[in-house]
Length: 122
Image (cartoon, rainbow, N blue to C red; front, side, top):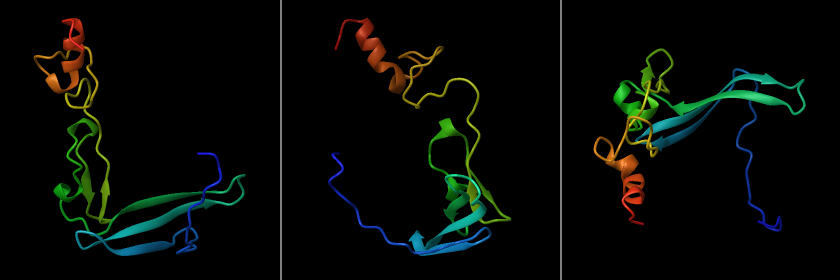
C-alpha cells in the first residue's frame, strides 16, 4: 500500500500487430495464446488490442465458465478461441443480486439476506 514495495516482472515477448505468443501447456494440456490484433503507437499512451485465450477449443463445453448469468460461451471453430456469451435478458438467479421479480422463494441464493432483514433477523 504505501509505494515502498515492488514486484519483479519479466519481459517474455515483444510483439507487433499480428504477433502471437504462446504459454505451452497452460491449462488441461492446452496453450494460452496471446494475439496482438492491433497497435496504436501514435496515441499517448500507446495502446494495443489483444485477444487472449486457450488454444484448441473444439466444443462449446470447453469454453463454459459455468455461470449462466453471463451467457453461454462458444468455441469459434475458425480461430480455436473461446468467445464470451451474451447475458440473458431480465433477472438471473445466481448472480448475487436480488432483482425485481426475484424473492427468497424463487431465488433464495440471491434474496435470502433481504428476506432475513425483512423478518427482523440479522
